Length: 389
Image (cartoon, rainbow, N blue to C red; front, side, top):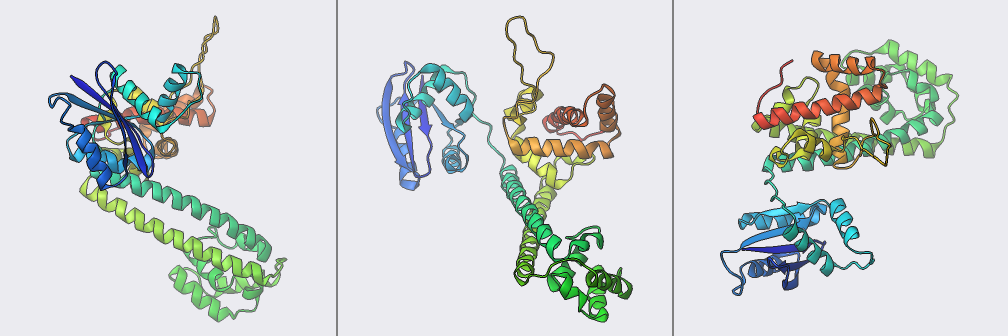
């Protein structure tokens, strides 16, 4: 005998509907997102009126952080959980009714019906270190995005205060350049500084690579600069540089934490040339438990890299663009890795050249490399083996 528990997850309160095998509603209730509410759910899972031998099937939408604690609580109590893709739920719900009526109560009942009618497998439990890597990778992704925005702001300010500065150093935001800009944020400030003082700063920040000659060069460029001085812009640049330094420090903290996890839990994905710990962490953490996927095509679909196909009447397409659904983080990491790996792997380099030789645009050829990466990663993770050319 089977019982079906559909749970509509929200931030403060969850709604649950319990169905029997004939899809009759046995119980409908709501419970708070706290210990008391979770205890109430356990009570209904072990309700005296329900047969103890019946299998409890529990389903909820993958709604991000709101359902994570609930899922973990159920697994600790030895219950299996099935999570539904919200897009799939929405499509099935739209197909069953034309009414635009939507309530948390009706959503919970619909999830229970989906469980009862579909042959859904419970989710494979996520390993703790993979969950940690996912949290760290996403936070790093967010910080890098913030730092990139701050760098753009700094470049715009610098283009007004000292437009010639970008020609002095290859990396405007390198250690030496940042040290100078933090102390002298405009051409006016650099034009009046003493060569000896600037030389001392250069030697310390560049570890002896630059000295007095570089200091004189910078001062000479600053004196002839067309930059317009603004105290407000100079202050804004100083604050923005502090933001960049802060983001960089936080990113380095996360990368050290990722490294420590890989020391304890080495992954086969790192054996692929060109995939380091940062990209590797994002890929394996977004994939999660590889047992979730029975073949590489399902993993390809999860990454949103499968081609979309539209066939109508006598028209049969020969190709299609990527669907771009699934995990955007995984898709970004794979596409980025697809640019790096061919530089270090002769196998992937030959594959990329083959696709370009077929007349494909570089970006299209790179997407094919990403798909090949998916197949390789799936094989390595499934068999716990290491990559060889």
